[in-house]
Image (spheres, rainbow, N blue to C red):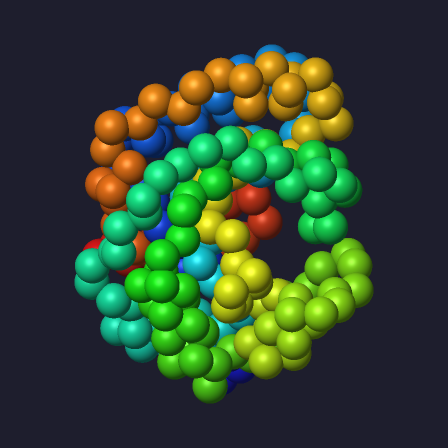
Length: 194
């Protein structure tokens, strides 16, 4: 039997208040750019992406730590000329702690033997991104990883400027869970949550 190759995402999924905030901004962005990248993705912060065998999903989920560490704060973060999308990606950046960094690195090391092929990108990586991509098949593992929840990757710079001047009011930043999603095109299916 041939193994079915599938893309997976190890995500932090925020609680309801944060979800509602991000979804409200996604709706606003959709009015400006209905075809913007990431617009229809579920609300999450990506910890790790990898290609694995669908038949081994139970093994992958067994590697997920049950409790998510704490994010200290959230603020607007824009990835200008995003190397992945080519647009400017509007996100809510999350302040990373050493606990988050270690959780991500531990998962990357643990899942490494199961990775079938690296995640493909439309660009060449350099520096720590290249080293991470060579080691784990994903360019954002380590100190250079910037946890964030994406709204959308946009061409409309005016919308982004208006957004980042609005305060982010979240009381429940630390409500959330770790989850594994199966990613097929634009469809994200949650297969496990802590």
